[in-house]
Length: 433
Ligand SMILES: Cc1ncc(COP(=O)(O)O)c(C=O)c1O
Image 1: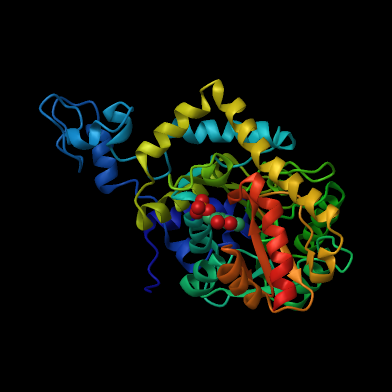
Image 2: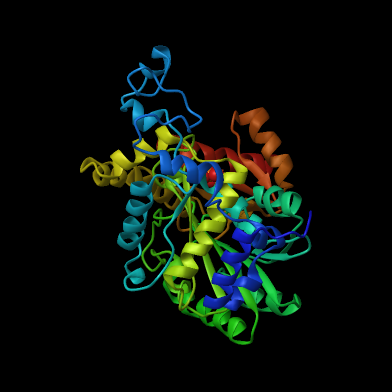
């Protein structure tokens, strides 16, 4: 990698340093060098917008100026051609970004009055996480995560950006989130900067912090930031909104952390993938928040992130962004979303019922703490989880995931009537192996 910093990147770095030098320190080498080009093709294209002849853009237009598209493709879409075929802007469709920003406020009322960037559109959360790694993770930087985390973090942070993934036990023996483990892990990793990831509702466990755990977590992170450490806190909110118990935190931790301390940059990764059941649409968002964040700081971070997006995927799917924008403005959306939530909640409650009705299952497996999301996990008491998984496949025509010494059960994908048989099979498989 050359060390040359383009003048446009240098200008953004200066803005960030002037607004908050700690955030400038958090940037990776790539993060310092990236910028969203204000000159060149994009600028010239912008200047030509609305002219009688605009021979600047790299898309094809029909004789009437509409997108030149193939009827065999266009006939499958309900969208106006202009909302489906052209490129989206690298940071995302402006109305969609604005709408998601508004929805963030509705979902986490604590955000009211706090400053944060405009959300930028990514190619769903995977890409958002990847962009966070691009901006903040250098080879050898440490990412701290509970030991039960989504395995793709290994590819995104570990393999692609050379980040060292350091873990701490997710739960305390009493079954709460292991805040003390986080405290010890922060202490064990020296250095000026630490990247921390928090994912609630969690994949794989289906755990979300209890309301009473949130102030403690915040206190812990703020104390670390106060001591001078630069913290990039990645909030992977992939399963946001799917909380099924009282006393469980329903807002995003972003609302608590986006103004927690000048040395703590909160980076929210979220999107409709799981929230709105559009896994294949590939639309997500990345949003930044830091105490005292100014519009200039956020615009500079957005410009860097937009540059990283442009360098990486250029822009996310236009038809998907258009469909989502229309859906979020549709009065039926909230009702439909509630119905989907109820479907998952009913399955969650069925698991609770089945496990309570079968105390004998506890001889064979223990449920890990769960209260939200798409999944719950069990730990076989004596049996090897991989052997249980194999047995379930071979003798019960049932597939679950075995990872880290536990079994993950996606109730999101299990019809209500199949939950009881699934746990009966699990019990038998644990006993048999
Ligand atoms: C915790 C977590 N984060 C991120 C993702 C990625 O989501 P997306 O499909 O939006 O890239 C997943 C998907 O399984 C996930 O479980």
